Length: 121
View 1: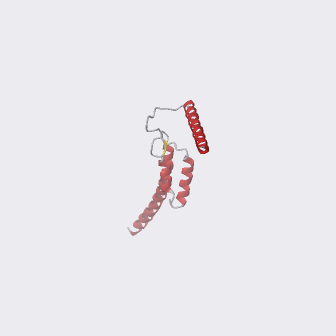
View 2: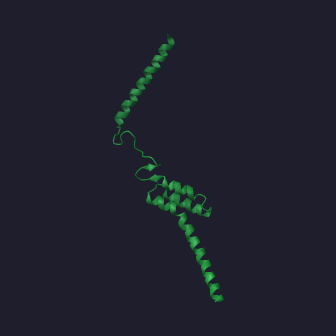
């Protein structure tokens, strides 16, 4: 019986070491799996940083998790939508932007002319 317990404890020791080893490797890969699922543009960098974090005792791991979680393909970066709050269906054409720009430039020119004339009086 004593010999059986020696072998059982040795088996248990090896089993625990192997499970811990593979468990730590599986945990370090979570940010990469999140990034891959979300089609993150920096998947490869997150995977490489995960391996670096593994050798640094997972110091970088929380930051990699945040980095992977802040991107979604349908809305981009961050936690807010990229569409304006007023009307998401409203789009501004290039011609509208050019006309607004020329109107602002004319207004600036007129204001500069008024200050130049106002200083001569």
